[in-house]
Image (cartoon, rainbow, N blue to C red; front, side, top):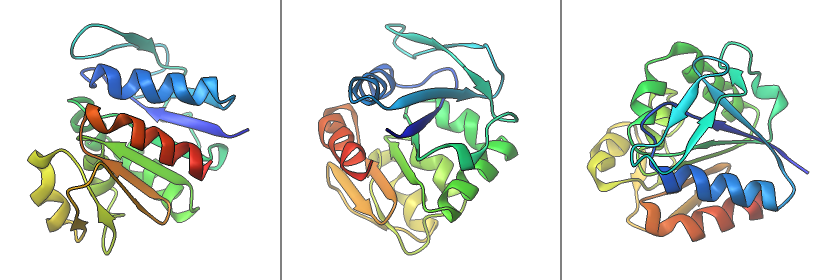
Length: 168
């Protein structure tokens, strides 16, 4: 089974963390929550779920994971300004690992500069950011381009989860 890293900070979209996380665990994959700090309680923006980070980003190594999942909401903004997070995602991409972002999740991919020439989707509010990063924006529930998987909003979670599981 695969080792799956969830990059998380406070303010994530609750269902965009909970549903993929539960699906990965139900499929038998090993999940690890990586935050800025180890042991931090990370709360969803709607307050329906909270998780504790298993590792800090300084402890995490891209080599250890088969996939990196980045839930949306406000968390990606907090993650993308951390240089260790950016380098982690860049290294995972260089190693061909699955990198999946939903809603605002692709903001971290933009900061890691891994979307040039890649077809992707996201929450419409960051559509221009994707284009400015050199990506071709597609308004579809899920877009798979090589190792990169992106989706738009919580309503697209079933397709998002399905494609991640297919890649693993």
